Amino acid sequence: MVKQLLQILGRHRDRIDWPRLADKQDRTPRPVDPELRERAQILHRQLSRFLQASDPWMLRKNEVSEGDLPPGTDWFWRPHLLRGQISPQAVASPGNGQRLGEDAALWHDCPHGAMILRQSLRPQPGQGASYGLRIEMLGTTCSFLALALELPGDALERLGPDRVLLLDTVMDAERPITMYARINLVQGPNTETMLRQLGHPVEGQGAARRAEFDLAYADLANRPIERAWLDLIFEQPRMNAVSINDAVVSHHPRAQT
Image (cartoon, rainbow, N blue to C red; front, top):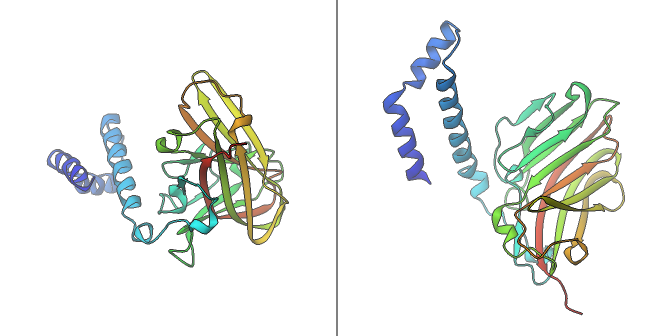
């Protein structure tokens, strides 16, 4: 990855003097060639991915204790949002569908995006997630708020009716709030969904919650799952603040009866 990135940087550096262009644009703002902006955006995304993947905090021990996972677990994953720094780390008035790193997005119907998102370092690196996400909900009229987590491709290799998928979370909330998890499984034109409540309302600090999805009860066709994502849904997301301190997705074989 590093060699490929250096090659990309070398090609772009030979053709465009980005520091000079940035200085010139700062001194005299003017319309910019759309193709040039597109090239800058592509380079920015590539650099952001590299910085996130090489974050020293992300390179520290960031695994999940086997004692926290069910016996037989053969796949688990923590979103990049909780493993490495994203850019930007703070967003005020996020739009619907605001991207949060490469595998997360926030969806909502809050007028004027009345909320603040903030990613911050966790106090004990190497023990669970390295980063956390705080969502401050400032409005009184929001009816829908969900954090969507796109599962990576290797999660789908064994996913099917003979598997049980789990979402384990640790959250803080200033006021009690009921949380739900929904798995979405795409097979061709069809999307199968399963919804689970994350136990009692989250309140105070360090609330651990688990959602379990037994895929034997999903209406799946006899074909591979092409895409999957999890929605972490906030009920009545108004005048509250929730911190997602950790989230781990895993799956294991279903017990045979």
